[in-house]
Image (tube, rainbow, N blue to C red):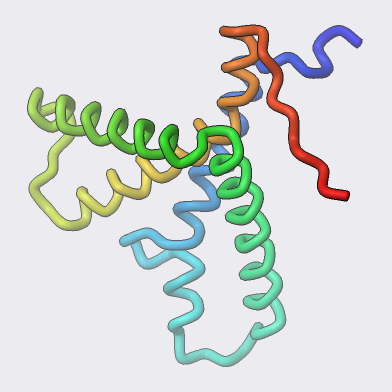
Length: 140
């Protein structure tokens, strides 16, 4: 069973990439997102729009539930504080421009993707750091 429950950098990267795809496919300022697609006057492809909407909703549900269960409210608050402080440092060092609403929107969406990816990976990371397992409660 070697490697069946091991978290690798590849696994973290895949979870991060999927989180970013879910976030940016749902909405982004470029005009190429599910949100913008829904607002088009074109009523064609309604079944396909509903299908894609359900797929995105499933992705959001999986990531939000995993984040909430692995981090908890205190962990989510700390993760938001961490990413916000990191963003502040990067803006203060002029590494990231924050002079337009579009830039701020992209940055906020990226931070949301980081938060969701952290939530998906945190149980594995905590197990590696402490040796403790997370066990889901089973209701009878």
